Image (spheres, rainbow, N blue to C red):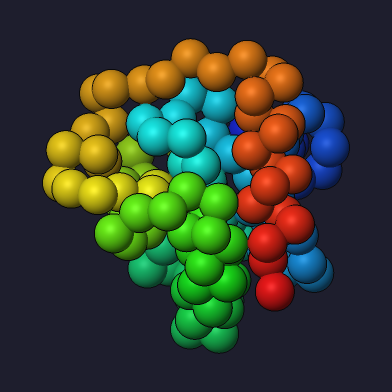
Length: 130
């Protein structure tokens, strides 16, 4: 059975996409811990990040770097934190979150944004990807 992320990539479930190429897909978390919280996933469905082949894992970080730079332009911050937790969805993924301190990556704190707010954020990030 396909993961929810595979269904998002296939367009079966809507998302606020910020990036897509042949191998990777990035979209906003619908329950973000900070505005700009983005998920980057390989299109290849593999449960654990460290089960990805080396080329796919390296490519994921290259894409994450590109998206992180765009997030930082939209949400000025000390840095864009990245986290790999991997328990909530059985599909390798990375969280990118604009942060100014450690408490900004508290996954127990979730924002409730409207679909319009999420769409605006996605467009802002997308338009700043180089």
